[in-house]
Image (tube, rainbow, N blue to C red; front, top):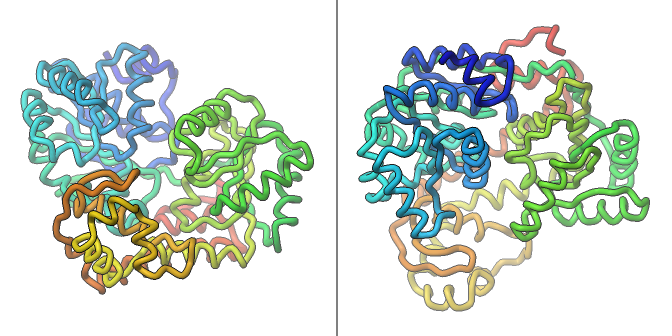
Length: 474
């Protein structure tokens, strides 16, 4: 069966989009690839179609992804098409996990989704060793790079992981990567630049109108939101950095009887899922959201994406505006820039980059007072560290870093630390921590340059991501 036949009969599409066909041909020819494609542009098909073609006589495909919720969505969709797909991650019960290992051992899967951390589990490695792996797909590949915007330490083990599965053909996929990140992804895969072909689609979306408006205060933001809501018939997203600002804007919309949804990370998981489904099924839904909303959102007719507060990086902004206008119809991407919002992002950057001394202080408390910390939680530890700002999130960041670098074993929610291991150099080297801070500050600065840009904003985005640009794309 040819790729075009699988595209039609399994996935229900008549034609390939963009560079999909070229990427699939590269993979089927045994060539490695780095794919940079906007969210919702069809990255998954680039490895799913080769996976189905290779399964019959060359082996299974392993997909490495950090996104547990998205794994489930993709596997559910594949299983509806009778594809032998599964995921193995921490969301499974012990019985479900053991059943999945047994199925893997007897060769029941053509596509298997896992997190990189799964390769630390001996039981998983034993079951996987009974299979031949023809293709390794690395999703959210920017997580490989320390210069990326969502670095995960276990992604740096990909050379080892590739060796474990027999150094198969490898495709890395992400929505955003600067030239620096691209080079690091290829190096971290153990490949040379000449071995991996780069496929980069950029923002070749002439239907997207990119605008920036300078505003002063919530009243002007409210006026712009009302204007855009009246101007566009169809679904829209308004992004906020702060839950407090989001809730205040929600009250203003309620006062004008403007129907809308509210979505943020502090809502219960069941409520978030219900809100996401309501948005996906609705014809004209407006949602006010933090950046917790959007991963896995593939709604074709979103007519506008409005940023009521400046995001923290060009990468985040690029991903979020990419959710607009996937059906090709005119759509607005509007950023409302209030200079006072800049201070919020600068604080976020400071809090998401605790220095080496702070990491060492938290580690010292964990060594000395683990029983009290387990008993009384993070708030008790926060008091011991003499926090003066109730919105200082450095402690939460440190716990997340400790969890990612496997400094601690146990649960973060609720806090229950079972074991403590040594701090890695990445968390105790003052220069390394400082360089990470500088990188995040540069990303915010790049977004400020975008705000001030008086020329073609699509050209600016292409330049930032190291892409050629042609006037016809605007």
